[in-house]
Length: 277
Image (cartoon, rainbow, N blue to C red; front, side, top):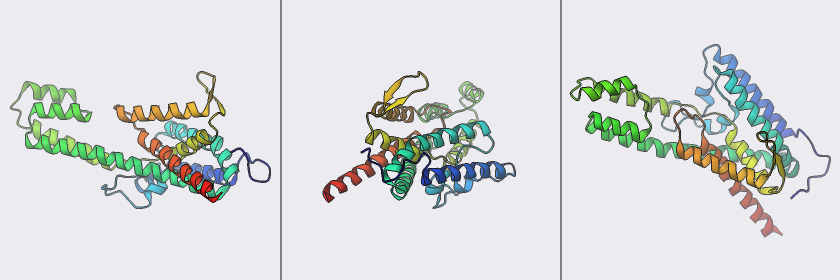
């Protein structure tokens, strides 16, 4: 597993280098256009399939976008962490596999992340829509309170208090329906961006192929084997995705999707190599 192709080990091989360059260019373009009122994520970010903003190329282009043009600090943190991980682990894989095979692997992991993320959104939105329809059939305060609790729906506490004190509120039900509908439209039109799904696939492949390689954690600064680091990371993503805390804008199931497709692709390649031999 540690035999590399002929020639010296490249610290910045061609595919990793060009992926980093493309991602940096796209961040600069996002910021430049964003200052002029053009939100590039509306065109290239991944949107839900029923959104009017969805385009067929977005499952591919979303993995070259990062952050928000209006939040420079978060954008820099997003792209620096992804590109550092891509360089750290991707260069090992590209030196071992060669540029063509590594690029195919990277893109498939990114597309797999988009597929898994969209699948989870389909399930979540179907539950949201079903609960919304049930509330509309009986738009009482108790039904709305149940909807808010089951869907982790944020609502003005003053509005809830006013409706609770006046069960016969004439406008409360209409306001609630309007607020839920606006939130639903905002959810399906929200863009998902980032190379994290593809990078998680690269990280998984490194841990799978080099399970006993030691990685140095930053906090705390202790060494840990790659297989344990990847396993813990996957469990954390699963926990965070299921918990789905309010204010968490990380696509955890996209990360898991990148890992899942990495595992599938690695197994296919390994099985094919065994049959060849």
